[in-house]
Length: 211
Image (tube, rainbow, N blue to C red; front, side, top):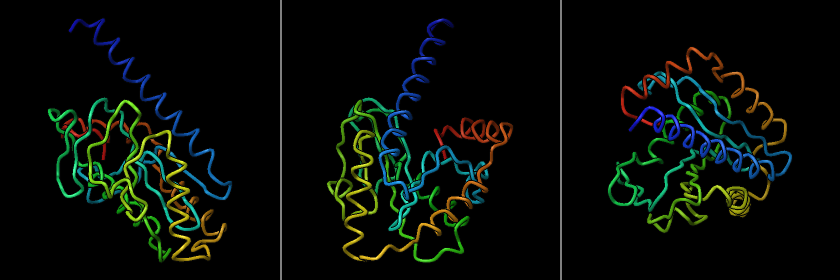
C-alpha cells in the first residue's frame, strides 16, 4: 500500500468512526432527561495491562447502568457469549466484546463502590455494516448482555428499563443519586492527552483495539 493510499484508508476509517459516534450520540440524546450519560471515559483499572479502561459510553438510569462498547466492523459477526474469541466473516478474529466490557464494568464498580444495588447491563453496539450470528439470548431483554445496532440503542435501553421496572416498580436510584454517580465518574475521568496516548500505545503493543 502506498503512503497516499494508507493515509486515505486511515481518514476513511476515522470518518466511519466519527459518524458512528455521532449516530450513537443522537440515540442517547433521545433518552429521558433524567437519564444521564458520559462518553469516552478513561478511568483507572488496576487489572488492565495499561492501568486504565477506556469506556465508550455509560448511561445512568433509575434502574440500571448501561455500559456501551462500540464497534465498527463490517461483515458477519460470529460469536458465543462463552467463547473467548469471536470472528468477522468467519476469518478475522476479534476479542469477545463482552469479556472486554466486563473489565470496563469492574473499573466503574471501583469508582461507584459506595453505591449499592447497581444492576449493570453490558451493551455492544455495531453499525448496520454488521450482521449478527450470535446467541439468541444476546438479543433478548431477559439478558444483561445485549448486542445491538447503533440505530436501536435508545429503544433497547428503554425496553430493558421497562423489564427491570417489572421487578422493581419503584426506581432504584433517585435523580439526585444519578447526578452523584455522574459527578463521580466525571471526576474519575482522565483527561490528560499524554496519559490517553500512553494508554493507546500500550494497547497497540499488545495488539488490542481497546481495554
